[in-house]
Amino acid sequence: MALPHAASGQLTRLQPLGDKLTAAVSSAIFKAAQLEVVRLVLPSGHTMREHRVQGEITLQCIEGTLDLTVHGQTQRMRPGDLMYVAAGEPHALHAVQDCSLLLTICLLPAA
Image (tube, rainbow, N blue to C red; front, top):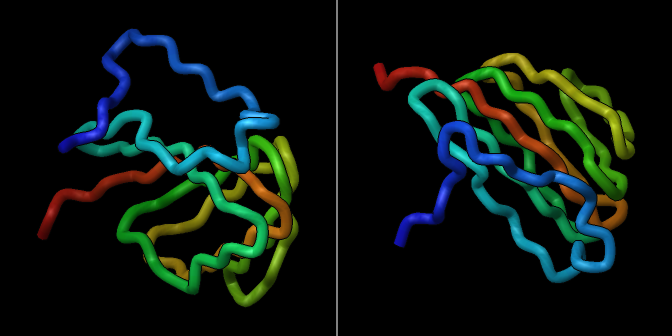
């Protein structure tokens, strides 16, 4: 079953989840031919091991705190912080606190 996605022109709220954060899960907001947008929810202590994405991405911290490792350097992200990661660049995430992020992915056509 496919997840529902926002339609063109549909308003989507991305405010902090607050008390609902601990029960929330990641959800796709929309996916188009060249762009995907996801609310990524990571519980405290959760780690996404080092991985690569074919296209460029951005990660914007909406709430909570996480450590993002990219280019061999770990940086702490807090609400309001935004990170751009180049296509194919290895990166890893570790949630220091329950957190939610806005993830945008530039999708590349299949070769």
